[in-house]
Length: 87
Image (cartoon, rainbow, N blue to C red; front, side, top):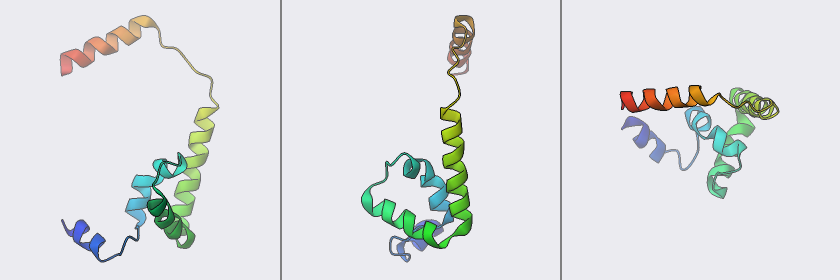
């Protein structure tokens, strides 16, 4: 509740917590223009968030270059069976 009230007074500005929550969408270019603009405005003045987003982007890029691995069919079925038992 307090966070929602605080957000009202920031006039659309994002804080570090917002940036952390929206970073994947930012990297994937999935933010609406006004949110992307607010995100970039925060990044322009926040070194820790610049480092966080840069590291996240590098990590995603590195993971994307790894070769794909197919799990054995028995493992897939075992996981599916376990999920059904737990739900």
